[in-house]
Length: 240
Picture (cartoon, one colour):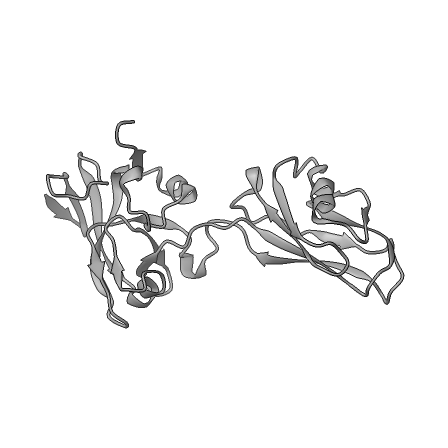
């Protein structure tokens, strides 16, 4: 084992973490943010193999926050009694959608757009006009900060100034967390315990081999983290 410019290179030996590979790996000294750890691991015990991110504001490492599929909410106001509206996404506009559309009808209209396509949105809630409908971007649009939909309410009738308003309720993407908390940087090497306000020195495993099926079940690791870490970490499975 040797250290160079704050980076430690080591070969896994017997007694090392089961999830870590057996050829030379790179680790770096870090500081765990105690309060961020406690927000996820409420007993203060963060396990070896926990996926970590870097809060660029505090320069301390925090539990990886995961990535998000974008969710947009369609709300109808003004109590229309008839007519239709349309939705526009990245320059393409849907066919007319009835004022009292169900979630399934909204999904069908959006999937008909070539820049969305079948299987790339799910919908819930409704029916309009009384209940909002949520649109979640999935499939090829998953984990992406997609364009904000707009709506044309000109075809709605009845009520008082009926309007359809799309809003983003969950921004999509893997790099949207405060201070970068949704961008994976590596894995915690060794179990740690923290207490409120007491940040803890630790080691970050950021280059080498990882057996993903041996990571702890509460590691926070997901497919987006794997994609972010893949340039430096080779992911394998036991027996694969």
